[in-house]
Length: 160
Image 1 (tube, rainbow, N blue to C red):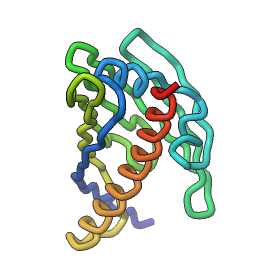
Image 2 (tube, rainbow, N blue to C red):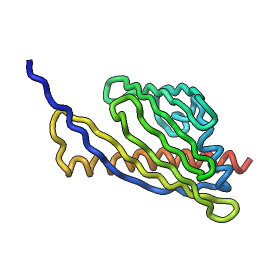
Image 3 (cartoon, rainbow, N blue to C red):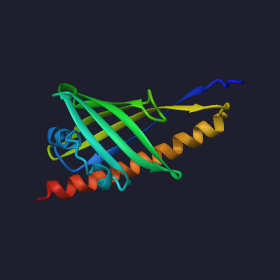
Image 4 (cartoon, helix red, strand yellow):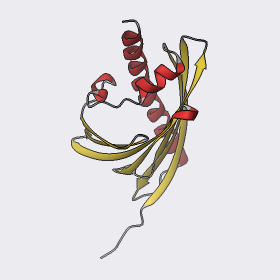
């Protein structure tokens, strides 16, 4: 029986998103994980949240992808003094990927999210650089769209 070597590739991408809330309020809202967050991001699936400590959270998500169900487990670590957090995939198709979030104030009533994605892709076959660039563009597009929806939900909530 022949075994195939699993290739791993790093894909880096990023974006930033304006938020209609003061930076500390935005941080609390962004890191207050809820089961219906996927709906807010216009994604299908289920999310379970386990709070380990005041700065450690496990997210277990089950989402449909290309005619199959994908389960992924993420470790979120909050860094309140820095108004930042990380989200590390500890299981699932992109295990070992890590996503970095940092908030900065933009005046007294607004803030900005700076996002950096460090996606790990696994494949039985080599992935050409052009395909990795395409994956990065697609991930950036999907993640920035999700954050536009989250920003709209925050704006709506902040205006109440």
